[in-house]
Amino acid sequence: MNTYCSDEKIFTVEEATNRQNDRIIASSCKDIPESIKFIDRVQRPLSVMVCAGVSADSRTKLIFVPQGVKINSQTYKELILEPEIKSAGSSLVKNTPWIFQQDSAPAHASKATQSWLLGENIDFLSKEEWSPSSPDLNPLDYSFWGTLQSRVCATPHGNLESLRKAWITEWEKIPQEELRKSVQQFQGRLKAVVKVKGGYIE
Image (cartoon, rainbow, N blue to C red; front, side, top):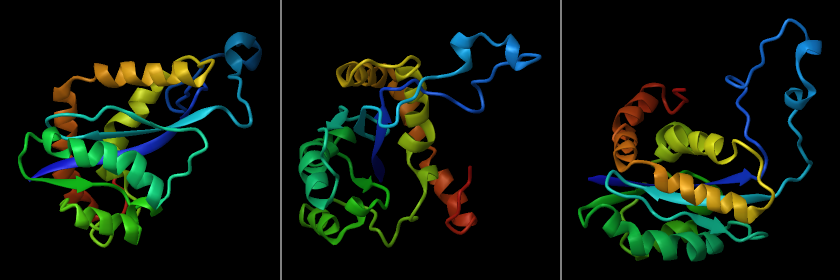
């Protein structure tokens, strides 16, 4: 049984930072140039919600949720499930049996969403079967969102169009073999989460 994993996440136009790796070594704060000492931030930066799906054999095109749209059961179905997952699901896994995996976000776990998936004969992991909070189990969470963000937002973007184009470029650069290896980690990671009784493994 192949697994098709979907996820969405919000990203801003601001420069990405990594508290573990973005460090400056200096004998004193005075030795650090002002140009690199601080990263400008605004209170409410422009942002976009990005949605993607992956399987061992393929990937979806990125979906960018329109500005101002809140993801609930209805918009999730109309903007993500119907145009992308329903139409692309079978081709993503080469017409072999597959199961749909999503996290337990409210729009995903709602009765309306679960009923729609059942009505469309889409095999999926129900909310009762899924760990309620587990980024350790979705390849987009444990392998790609963070890495892509560091590439896409290595420098800040002046507008959302620039941000979207950069996301598309970097998404398409990922070798399929890299996606395959990440998806194939799923079963091992699932066993690890079961071992810690649904807790985090990273």
